[in-house]
Image (cartoon, rainbow, N blue to C red; front, top):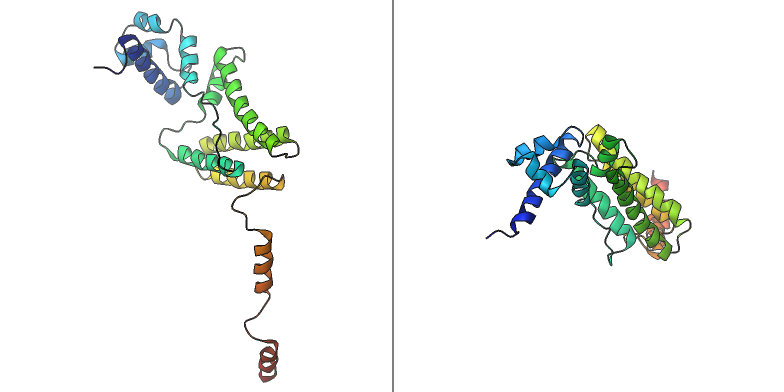
Length: 219
């Protein structure tokens, strides 16, 4: 027995196909005829589930609209792990940039519901970070959240243009510098007393002072 009732199963099939084609070939490049033919249904049947291509576009983007989740992990760790996830995404065979950025560029209409959804998605991610920074009493949390968001967007675009997943690591390093300089706790940082002890030991020679003097006289 199918997991989905017939109507829901067909909706999912249409969205699966439309999503693959929209993301792989472009929203403007793929018509409803192409999607229907790929599935093996008529265009009229497709319109019974999605009355217009615009509604299909919005449904496709809605699948990617994932709310940022809270976690018990330190904030810096959460953010840096996200850059690690980006690097794995960039290295995948299917990576073709951000579906929201692609949609805005391809639609060319800021009033389109899909474009508005893209703006809302990006902003909710930025606001999640801003609110977390507010709780940490960081100076200018709004500005810092915007800076980190720019690093994320820049990494996505650079990876698409350069074909180099490693740009995520560069963006991650920059994010660490920005956040720790602003006072965001770094769970991997070495405590100051340990650093002082390490510096003190590094200045000491294994040999005693008299022994060093003796060696200098011999040499």
